[in-house]
Length: 368
Image 1 (cartoon, rainbow, N blue to C red):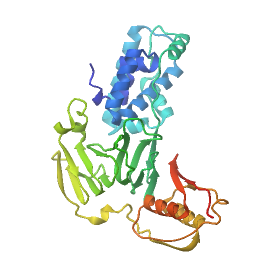
Image 2: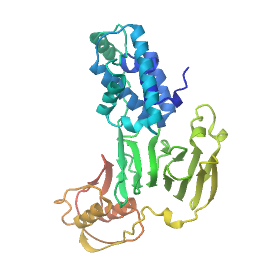
Image 3: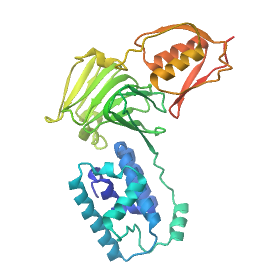
Image 4: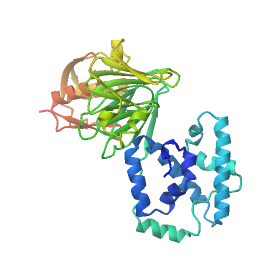
């Protein structure tokens, strides 16, 4: 069996078993890749890119080729991809857009084409797709903060990620059934909704941070020699990524992780490949945002309060202004985070809220 953990997008797209799953799946193939994705949630983005590339190029070319030509094309694509890797530090960025990915293969391979099946017509493929179960990969959303202000990212489980300048986060529109996985490059503060049945996982290049519901900060810029995790509330487990990936073969007690309590931090030292735990050295990092957001409202319509929060956090709050026209509140906010502020406001007017599709939706029957 292949070691798919080390595969790149190109490796997967030229792998016979992977191509068979995408183009002409079987129950055995589907079962394998379903299980592999469940065991390796951090590879979902990679799998999605490779799958998308296979489907796009497959759609462009529908002529049959001999097995010898297919083997030749695979070898040529692999060879040219390796050349490209040596020229670029990170080839995945080259394949960031679907159309560029298809075009890149055509440029690299010339007129060779890229065939992903032999002896199968389009009708056979369609019939097979209808007969066999298909695997749906949740599309990933990518948010990058190019501004000097913090960016607020609302997740589907009512968790909030505050993204710092120059940072990027990747996450699914809706979390899966087993866990809530996000992928971070840079620095973010997380306020995670509690769900003991579905752990929240933050993946960086070298670490995995696992929580059930808490608030913490992760700092993992590529140019730094360290990855930092600092805990404000709750309990957080931090693993070296290579150790965490072996959890499917070991119990959690056998894996060398670090458990953190409030006001504790762990530093992963990259050049020494080790985790070092200690007390939080800079308490300011335990705040949701690096910007002071003190707010005072004195007998203000709640609609004005929502507008102020929209402007501060750069978010959208959806509400019925007519229903809330009689709602007036007085409040003073200092270092509370967004969720604490929303909870206080909703409690004051007898309302509730949900985070749906990156927006806050207010549920209210009005104020009497």
